[in-house]
Length: 86
Length: 233
Image 1 (cartoon, rainbow over the protein chains, first blue to last red):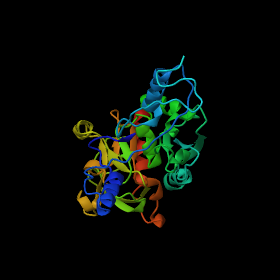
Image 2: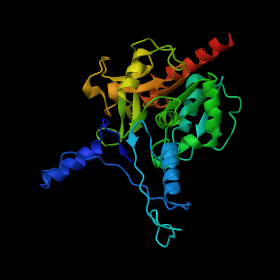
Image 3: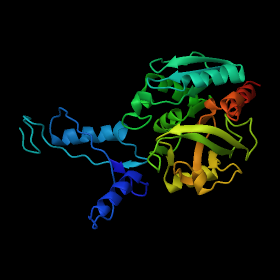
Image 4: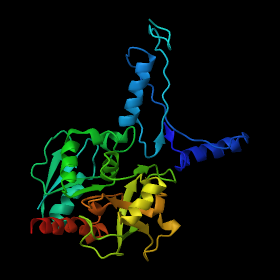
């Protein structure tokens, strides 16, 4: 999740300034968010994505100030690959 | 009148609220635990400052799911006076009882110093004892106090007279320098539509007696007395 467009992100701005001072002049915008890695059991990748989506809506993100995106990948040793498993 | 103060794991201004009510106001105060499920016959609810659940995830995000919050929400929706101070304000916003959100201070620093506030509205459950435009001085103490909402919500709050406190200078002007944390429209406190739920970031509970440096905050608690008396009569 990351601060919504239009919401001031002072942390992202500070990081952007530091990057430009280091010579990365091509950096035009930085939005600093957070990553939450969930390990969960689900029928398949779609079910996992749906559940994580609901978790974001209910608790993990605050829609007033944050946007979020969900990405799914199989846990190590999992039988379920992204769309592949039985 | 009986004020209930809800303690969450990590609350640290619960005793300040208790003293403000008992010593400052001369009314009864008692504590509720976040795992309680009823309000013990309270006439008003105070959600105190602190760092409920360590402020993990976001300030107030986890506290809003405490068992006690179901009872607080019913009480609020029935018109009962509910005040959230600092972390309590953050919890009320997360719970959807108040609009907007409290984001990290624009300067990225934890702030702890006195501020001046103007009383924008006196027709709420916690500001009836003040004059409109009155300038109050009290401390604030927070890392996440920047009031944020989308433009449509901000416009609606202004139109409906729901901006209750604004950061101002000592003369009562909302200058950029007087806004400590980058809050949009210098908003320090808001209320719900029914005006019985109020939240603010600064601490009236730390400014209830002259010996603390200011007794400007006492009116917040005194206002609840008049509110309840009016509801009874």
